[in-house]
Image (tube, rainbow, N blue to C red; front, side, top):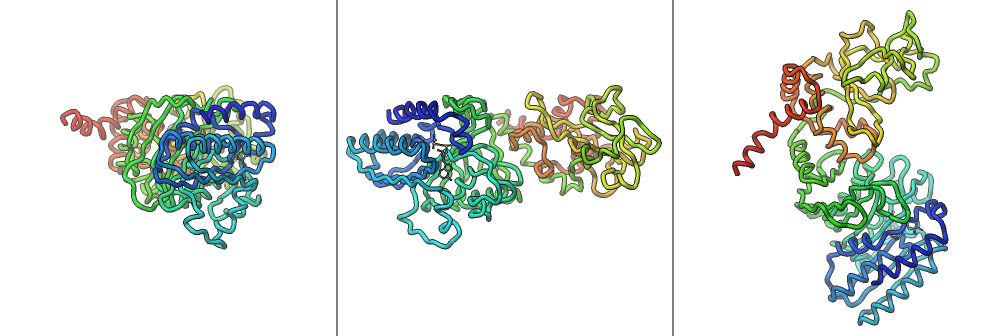
Length: 510
Ligand SMILES: C[S@@+](CC[C@H](N)C(=O)[O-])C[C@H]1O[C@@H](n2cnc3c(N)ncnc32)[C@H](O)[C@@H]1O
């Protein structure tokens, strides 16, 4: 097996060069199971093919495609271009490409390959920026890649070349994805393994806009465990494999699959409507990738809701008091002119418990002219933690803040908290409790997890979560007030009774 032969040599190389050196250039090697899986997604059956492997490392992904070509006999003429700019790995890449060529030629194929020992992004600057044209023959049928993962500065040459899709500090991997999309022939396919981070977040919006309007996704594979995708290299991040084709034609479905780990024993595979994964009419083009049947059902429910916090007249904002910038303003003990300063440790069973008897955080902030820019009017707010630890069960953790429980006209909300506020007027009790039902349910919590793999709860994403109408939200609020219980189970039951009973009954009847 070509792939295994290449991998054995890759492992030796990895030991020789060491992880720290490779990490600096974003070099992590793909294990054979994933290389074979990625190659299996190729759906190409003409007699001649132009392949690009970009950030080729030791050539295992090109090797995977060639292995597949050997097993499926229609392709006879193979042209492979490879980009790799690490001079240490180039001798092994050359050796492996010679091996690939020999094996393919022994099996009656013709192979031409070129290794470009160049920077993939900088080499294609002119083409990306419209200063150079390429004929269709120069573009590619299949582009395969495990691109480098590395944050780069906005001023670095790669960021400058692709500034049209850069917002903030980019990670070089998505520049590779965009450049590859550009270099595909019409209907050409790209197969990439990448971090999952590009699927949400404002920093990736310009990229998503370019990418999702240039190619259509056909397959996404998720790994449930983030630990061991790059076995030898222990990369601690969530990776996905995706396949996309260059077309603007609408595709109805995406195949989503998942496996526990890099051994690729698929434990989930499902066709999902394109619109469930990405709403191409939305502003942010966030992608949601469900990995169980329950998650598909949940997305279907949440996507049936037509509003969001903003359209309903609310907004989630970040607490304005940054403790180290407000050292002169915050106090350990109450003084004549102080008001409460709320932190995550005031969340107790979804209510605000203030003051707490022992606190490592100062619990008060002065209400003076200097503090006005960071203080809020004491109104009804639904507070939502911004940060949770990986070990915690819930990402979205909220707490009810009722202005009536406090005597002061002002309140401080610390920067590790978000708060949901009504933009005009006071949030009435039913609205507060209705929003609480949603944000304390496992539905919104799971939705958020699917949307964003990270442990942070960001305003842009929460403000875009689909929500039901204000009338429905108030009905939810009334119901929870009648039950006298504010547990997640109660919140889930209310949502199920209001939105799912009919669907489930219909399905069972059907
Ligand atoms: C994540 S590794 C993947 C290697 C190989 N494709 C694999 O799957 O095992 C990314 C590779 O891209 C190379 N690389 C990093 N920046 C590059 C650039 N700007 N142009 C070309 N190659 C680059 C690194 O040296 C590294 O070998």
